[in-house]
Every structure is written in C-alpha cells, then in structure tokens.
Length: 69
Image (tube, rainbow, N blue to C red; front, side, top):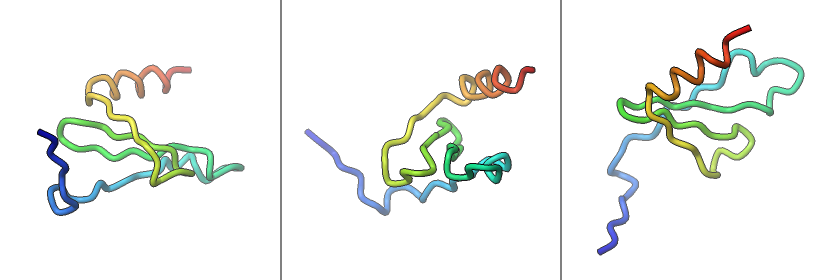
C-alpha cells in the first residue's frame, strides 16, 4: 500500500538563510529548516527542488567542523 501525505498533514517548514548570504553572491547558499527530528537543507536557488535531511546530531557535528579555522 502506498500512502501519500496531503498538504494538510504537516505544517510548512520555516526556512532560514545564513546571514553570510548577503555577500557578493547572495544566491549561492543553502537554507535550513529545523524540526524536532530532522534538519532539512536545500539549495536557495531551487526552493521547489529536493532537500536533504540530517539527524540533528549529525548536523551539529558538521556545523562545528565547518566553523573551525
């Protein structure tokens, strides 16, 4: 059996863009939407396209790694 969720099943995600995105090329960035169990990541140039989902712990580890000098 295939179950397709309807548009009313989940609230829309609140996508956030980094404050660093206002530089020389503001369209070249990602947007992030956090829910209790998943951190969603998408390309800001293709908001209707696919998104990736990460476990919150995995996303936090990536952010800590990326923030290192």
